[in-house]
Amino acid sequence: MKLTSGQKFLYTRITILILLAGAFASASVGLWGVPFWYGGFVLCLWGALGLLNYGQHSSLWLIHKKPWLFVLLYGALAGASFLTDTFGLNAHLWFYPLYQGIGLFWVWLVLYPFGGLAMLELLYFFAGYLDEPLHFKEYPQTRMHRFFDVFESLLFLLMIAVIVLGAVKADWGLALPNMVILSVLWMFSALVKLRFHIGHPGHFILVIVIATFFSVLSHELPNTLAREWIYLEQPFLNFLIFGVPSWVWIGWFWLNLMTLRLWIFLVLHPKVR
Image (cartoon, rainbow, N blue to C red; front, side):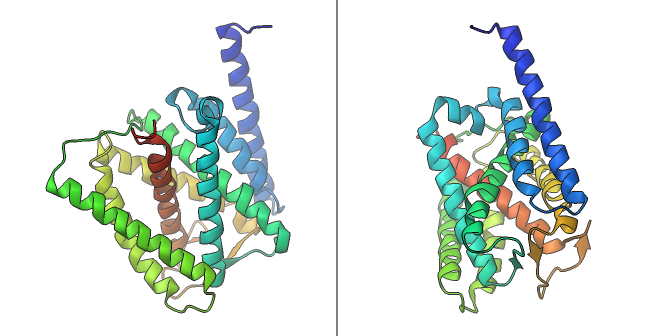
């Protein structure tokens, strides 16, 4: 039976409410100190926000209209998750008391890729709410534009190279200092580069900041009690904000930019569209 537009709207809204309830219930379980809450949370949150953002052609729309492109995006997120997580484990940034051996594939293939997709949908949600839709634009080329296009790309490749080396060479003592320096430089250059590819850079940087704040509170706060992953003390930025180390807050800002960068490069760029 073919559904009318009114029925589709109603059933979609009911599904969104169910998924949001699932995300809230999963986070609540984490706040009660019960582990294994995160998988249900990210899957439900991604599904709910994906349905809300469907008209903006975000990741859930991509599954329906261009599944091969979604598979490419998912593969990139899963690969980046594996390398970054292995880097973090080797650098003693965090560890998993509940996931060992084959259980880490749940982390790399489900938790982190769909966590990244949930962050992407959160960016779309706040961008639409603040009337700053995420559309790729190509402004007239200037020297500054060309410089940051090249500079950001070089920094990005260098940063990925350090992540790979740090993931492969567990005893490489310079991995973390190099990663910190390159990440700071890359985040700055990526924000400048956004100036040449979106409508209003100031508004969208605000969107990224708001999405980062919400991501940390929703993804990290329940884990301070459930402790599916545990952060280790670092020689810098260890003071807590809502129970989460300050360097982790910066890391989530980096994750938002990284996810957005992959999305633009693999999906949003006009040459791909």
